[in-house]
Image (cartoon, rainbow, N blue to C red):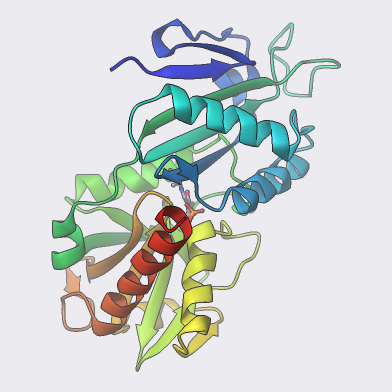
Length: 286
Ligand code: PDD
């Protein structure tokens, strides 16, 4: 399958897309990104993803290279040029190319704008049915985790800890509180109440997180948006992970200890069904 990407407005085969080694994305991880899931060739929650991209760009003082209508057009063009009804579209903006390696911003640099699509690989049904294992780690990232920036070294190291332990995700704790996963948001359930760590500069405001809270409200599932202490997370009846690519997954073991009964819980089963029904109505219904 030949994949087509978009680099600075030009559509070309993935293998031919090249950027300068002086690009600040390469040298400093200086830039922003987004991942938009696409179902039935329709971007899911696009307005929300583009709003979060604006938030990230504002936060790193990088002008948005496109208005939302242009982003939408470029995304549609990439989706049309790639295979698969369901795709995962990656948007990437760097501060562009400086004349020398200098931390401070170049006086005038054009941003580098890169868009690619990958097949959307939602988790295999076995992960949902059996649940997944997670490890925990101190949240060693910086203090602006609300920004979806290219600098992901801490997230990569943290996710690798899970993989090295034969697990899927690493749950992060900072100052005795649960923040999120290395590349996901984390929810807890205790006594039938959904517990969601609040949005702050220490957590990425997940688009899937918002959908889960909306579905909880719509269906009358009791929910508390508040700090979740590490001890509470470890004593939860259920833990879930959410992200655009993994949707909602049950975590059944944390650091080798069973979460609740050690199998996917009833509240998860309910939320998963609501999530799939919501996706169907929004994306495939008409
Ligand atoms: N990551 N928290 C972090 C640190 C993330 O990287 C992500 C998503 C999320 C969930 O956000 P959303 O529901 O909007 O996908 C939370 C993407 C999938 C990634 O970097 O691959």
